[in-house]
Image 1 (cartoon, rainbow, N blue to C red):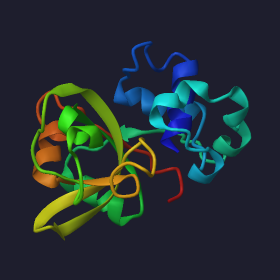
Image 2: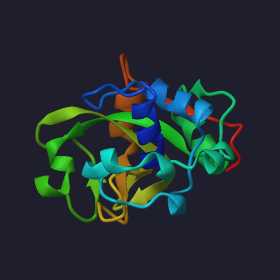
Image 3: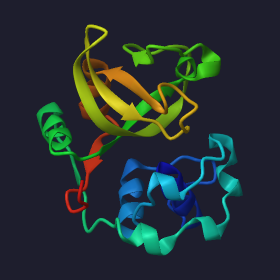
Image 4: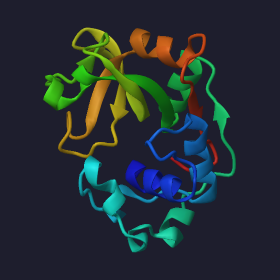
Amino acid sequence: SVRGNVVYGERNGLLSGDGYSYLRNNQKVLVEFGAQEEKDLPDIGHENWNNYSVSVLDMVKAANHKAQSFWSVANRDELLKLLDDGRVVQAGMEWYSGFNQSGGFKSPWLITKNLGYSVGGHAVAIIGYDLNYQGVKVYIIQNSYGKSWGDNGKFYVAMDHLDKQIFGFGGYGCYATLDIQP
């Protein structure tokens, strides 16, 4: 669950007071804390993460999903290979007001260009890909906003669009951990 990682990161100085973090810090959370399973952390809404109690962060269960190491993914071929192997790849992307449902984002939940104005960076989990989604090659991404957002919590980003943001000069980057079993 991304929610557990964000709460742990915030409480342990890996997330700044304004909610911003470096993508590398997300990997540090996986090494220090691990990851809770989605079923073990209730979805109380994206705006309410500060309301999670310490008891909700199940350190014992999260420790079952700890990483020993992490590294940067260099290109699309590496990313697709990781996805083919059943891995999840964490990436950063620029987030725009038009990507929020209140900004008009709706089915088919497809991002091919920037919509609205930039509201900052956003960490996401790339969980798969589709080489012909609405006629576009896309990454399938699990968002942290919960299942009520997008396509049951997922959305789709054109590979060419996201590749520029994660692999381009000064890009957000993306990371993988191979020592956590898929």
